[in-house]
Length: 134
Image (cartoon, rainbow, N blue to C red; front, side):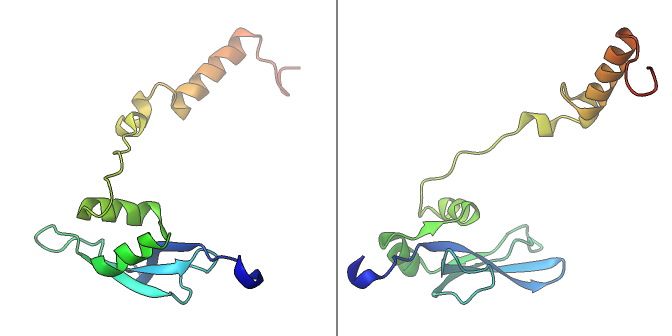
């Protein structure tokens, strides 16, 4: 820390634009302590998550600037890291598969319905304790 200055942690993250129910994001380099809509250091790309008619979600990247910011230590957010991985600028992140979310709630082994039924069964088996059973 020369001259007593604190080093700034730069993040590559999304800044939301667009309108209600129609998001559009700018990929920006920004100080990590700034708010989402804070003044960015650099605009390095855009991301439109709403697929066009042909099913393409548009991502535009300024590869030269992204490589510069990564070289000086900028950390991408999870979403930006995923986008950069899809573009081939970073190693692809492992796919997060959640098998419990893929199954319907009623059929999950530890669903709230099964938990409530098990709890009700346990309460009846122990004599129905609780406030009303006294």
